[in-house]
Length: 225
Image 1 (spheres, helix red, strand yellow):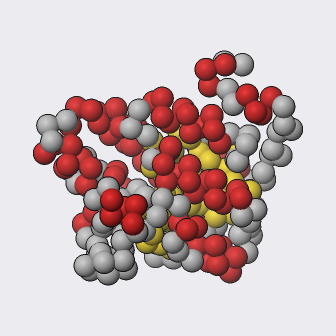
Image 2: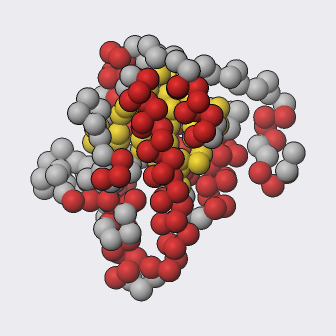
């Protein structure tokens, strides 16, 4: 075990069980893959360029590109297995963004309803029966009806991917786990601004709040349903 990436608490507590996927009880959650934070020409990318610090995000955009490739594989497998797909995005319910969450207001991350920054990336655009949920908090469980939606779908197991790993993805995983969902995070379909932050989230979550599985494994398991 590499002590630099080990959560020592998992050494004294029993491991989580291996959560099985099922056609009738699993959903894929894609977190915040929108132009605000997942496209270099908009949102944080545009702000970084305007501030003359675009190079700071060079690693991140490469990580996002890799994550999108794996998310596309997960999407195709989820659709083929007929499991629900839910996208979350940072966006308000109003065109004036007057309902923005306080924390997002503090950091100037108000995304009005139907704004370009709210658009999901075209490469992983939602299908006709996929669900898109707008949120004004890091975790959708704090500002949306996603918990009720999942209950209505009969879902108790979540596949989670998206951006950023140590932010909205981690918050989603933690809240879902606390609410009793069996959570599988797919790290190679996630991205963070630095590799250290990405790994820190994995260390915090793996075998404490979720199983972590690579895209290839998840796709194979979905294909077997």
